[in-house]
Length: 84
Image 1 (cartoon, rainbow, N blue to C red):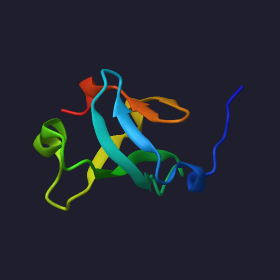
Image 2 (cartoon, rainbow, N blue to C red; image 1 turned 180 degrees about the vertical axis):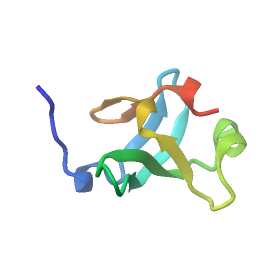
Image 3 (cartoon, rainbow, N blue to C red; image 1 turned 120 degrees about the vertical axis):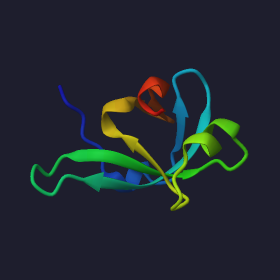
Image 4 (cartoon, rainbow, N blue to C red; image 1 turned 90 degrees about the vertical axis):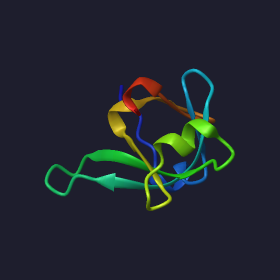
C-alpha cells in the first residue's frame, strides 16, 4: 500500500544520506508539470558539511533527485550514490 504524505509535513525535515551525511533541511519540491509527479527535493544545505559544499549549486540550494529518496520518517534518507 502506498502511503501519501502532505508536503507541508516534510518542510523542515532533516535530509541525510544512507551513510550518515547531514545534507540539510527540506524546503521545497520540484514537480514535473506534465506528469504531476515529484521529480526532486530542494534542500537548504548544511553549510558546515564539506560533502554538501562540494555538491551544492550556485543558487545556494541543493537539488536531490526523487529517485534517490530511500525512506521518509523522522528524517528523509537519500542514497548518496545518486547525488554526485
